[in-house]
Length: 193
Image (cartoon, rainbow, N blue to C red; front, side, top):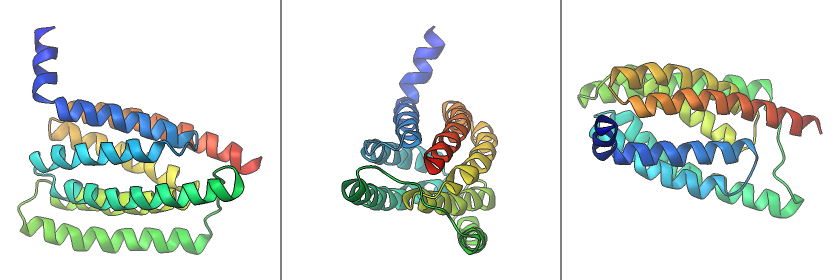
């Protein structure tokens, strides 16, 4: 019991980030606007956690996520206000191709910069960060494809965080895989309705 309390005492920000992330993603699977302010809190907490772990791409990603979260909140709010609910929008094939290509370019460029900055796992962290931006963009635009990409990314993130001894965050990302599957199912049902 003391070991668990000691761990939480030294990893309090990480624990708070885990809790707020799980809540925000669960609310996202339900297409609830409340997901966005809670996600904003999670982004802010993980900005500090990743910076302290020298996962600079992850920290930089949180800064971008803050901007994307504000945009997503406003976009969903406008859509819900106009139509009474947050609707799912199909992602055309060219959107898939453009998104995956942009993620690859971002991964190479960010990986190069992070390697020179002395980041830990610069190329892996950069690739995950770059594709996370694509998944987040698709989420703000209400494309069900975001969940497929999150499933793949979150699975890889688990290994990265275990390697960096961020065990709470690794457990979080294991839960996020499950939440992404739930989101895929819920959004798929909503798209058919």
